[in-house]
Image (cartoon, rainbow, N blue to C red; front, side):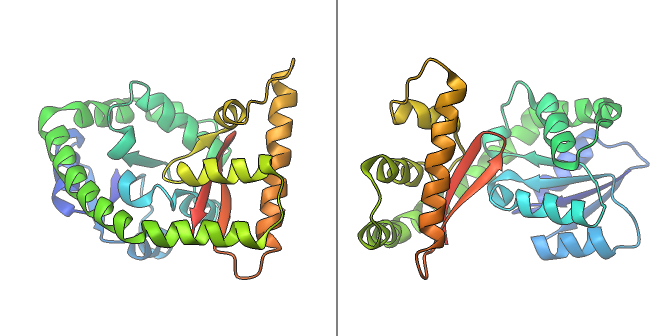
Length: 241
């Protein structure tokens, strides 16, 4: 099998590959997303599995999935490291995510491979290296965050001044902004906005209506650098461009 990796460092990918691979397996490393897509779409050989560093690609996995699907290329993708590194349901999540993204139902055939990869990610040497790399990445991210925090706050405040939204929609915007580093579920939004109805379905419909109204306001605001992205079923994220 051919495995393609794209991450912040080659060494951790080589270590992970060596921990789960067989002698007949092949390794390929791509330093960035462009080289990855070039290899996957225009390469001479079709990869069997793609590994993406969660810390680098968590905001771009939608684009990669959609592009590959549009090219009728349905190569399973594994996000490793970051918030997924200690998941007790990692294999089930890999299968479910790829089957939903690609609209396929055959990834149970890869369970033996996924099991080896899961064991490798749980091994001490791989885990230690990933945690070390993630720590360095988080330190850099914190520095960048502090540098851009004021700029982002100014962006939100500028948007509020230009719009005339009711308090409930502004409350939704503030909540999404506060949690813009992660996916936010419909249920979380319901609890934050104190939406309590007899039917959960009715509550979710109200949240969907609020999100649609906020999106419409963003679309109608010239040069607005905000975007509300549906990351997966029932989850949203506010992107600050």
